[in-house]
Image (spheres, helix red, strand yellow):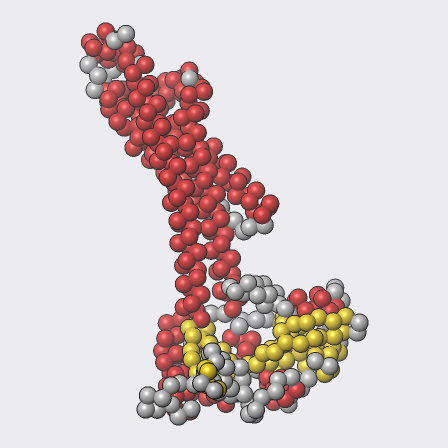
Length: 408
């Protein structure tokens, strides 16, 4: 018996009991739809985290000041003013594994344009800060070394600030007030979106570092920075760069003899990579949980196929009597089982894709349906048919023709 003939017989057998065939497929349909939808949700979350990681920059190391002790009470990391602009310059010039280093200060305040005002984060940083963050200027010009050396009162606006202060108008060349001090807008930064912590990175104004130190941030010492952000030469050199930074700052800050360091370093790329890995693991976990329903559906197929073998015992006996071999009977029932699961798989893929799209639109949750997840789901559905259909098919092929013909 050729395969085409076997397929026709299998389709005819399924059409004979349409309702039972559909109910048998239902477990597979639900299982495949759940797998597709859950993997789409997980992949969407991984994609968002990847985008957020990319928005921060690559190969990043963060140097934070140490803590202070007052009255026996210790502040947290960053409580002391122990890092300076000179530390940042030394890191960039004396650490071979470092590409860029930029000290920066952060504050917040009211920004005013005419009768419009907006409260936002104000960042002071040198030109290297934008190289490290891989943050382009889409309109106007960037902050230059001359702006920083001269403490010029110029600024770059994030997209959120520009939209709230100027609407659709071009702000380049306009005068705004930051903490009541006039600044000239020289450019608009490209949109970055949310950070991994959920903060709007575009809700910020950037000014030259020395301008911020002299006019916007008060500190007890000259040249103090809130943190230093460092970009390593490559991903492979991040750990080496971190070691070089620690050794250099220990030397510059005279940290010897077991004395506690007045700074700390954080490998930001490593931390964010862990977050991305967690999202991928969650995606796989969701898919694995959803795939349990496929096993339940497979058991249902085995049960129905066993019933089918019992109902068609005389038919099996007649086929054997007129020359059908055991392999023909085995192939016949295997084909029916695989056909059931593959049809259920196709319907499940369509429902899963539709469900993922509905979740994305109704809940505004990012979802991504990949060709890989569809292929895996389809192959898995066929595998379920082969695995759970084999025993009933083998039982049918092993029937004695004489006993089968006598069966009532």
